[in-house]
Length: 268
Image 1: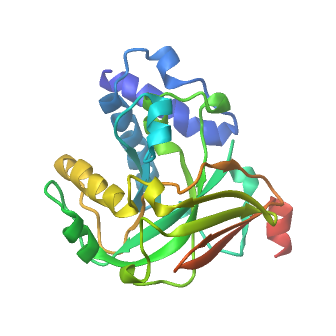
Image 2: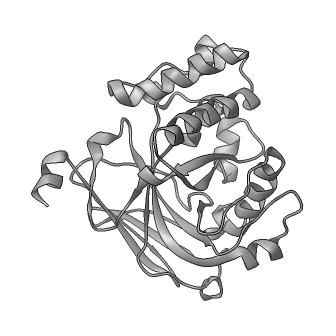
């Protein structure tokens, strides 16, 4: 894709939220688009958001389970950017209407205490860089109609990033056995999923290593203080106004997201 096509695709995705209407898959109008093109489309949107005053506060890793990679026909994860405007406080109302097709999923979030710059980052380097971990809920959203996404579409759409809710109590990394950490995921008091950290590339720390080594050659450093979401422990579930979502992770406690509408927010 040439630069004008990149700008066109990025503009379509940027306007989706403004118009509150998803758009057709990128690959329908740009059938030759590659993964590299998709990341260029993503970066163009990030430049637009930061130019408007938002700030990059971390990254997410997607497609980090074997099942999702098989479904998408890929052999590695993808990544997206987390902007400051995506972060929400737990237990506080989140405007469900701000999203187009929201789903939610549980994760173990890393908060970095020092920089990580690839390539060459090892698991040992990653462990040293993590200041603490917390349970997290990621709101994933697609600006592509009916979630009809290819790998190119989801990457271009900032890896379907939507929102982040972090647990309120930080824990040192040695407080949790990452691969064996069990998670119970519930919506409105009903369990909708269970899993362990090992669902994420064998261990969530592997996703952090992959991310650092993937973005490093692109000139991107994972910054101290940034949040990294390594991938979901269970499958994502649809969410709407009125839903209360809780994820509990052994050794880390729980995190709660409250989905509301604008009227509920104003009442609070």
